Length: 223
Image (cartoon, rainbow, N blue to C red; front, side):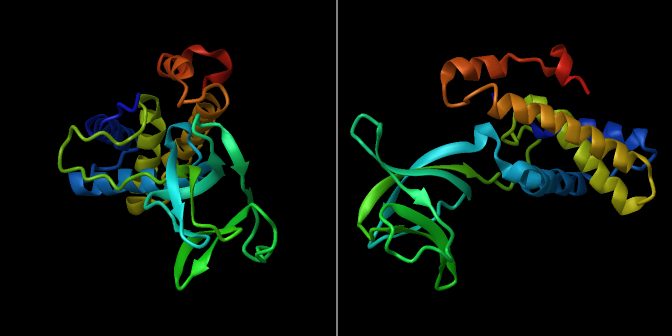
């Protein structure tokens, strides 16, 4: 359940700053720090391959070329599907340097006239199924009820990383910077295992397990 709200993060962030002996920032600066964590830190961690960001779409190719989804981060699977949703023809990814247009059922992502696009061979006009990891949307924190697109279990590491960013602006020698980042990294490692190895978020039975898992109650997940 993606139920983590901005007000919860803002409250935790203020507490962490106080514990570090750093005066609190205003709401705009707190919002910026949290957005930076969501859009930069969490997208750089494990290439942003969080289970709940794994989505699918139908991608229409014209003469072997298609635009990337607007929220595209990195692709995982590209294939033509049967009417029942099963895989009819899988496409294998190759690098732009080795995509020479003579290997059947391959694809790459390359720069075409200054824009990154998908290219496939054969250069068909066809609709394919793409599974990919999406980027986090930039959050407008004009409302304190805004949902940030992550589960409540992420509240601690997101607040810690945001606090580390804010403290560094004011006091780069503060020991809490390293403490918060190390703690956040350990917590993210735990959450990554839960999201991507113990569950498949798009399968309802495992989604229920994920939503009801308390990582603090699992011995080897304790920080």
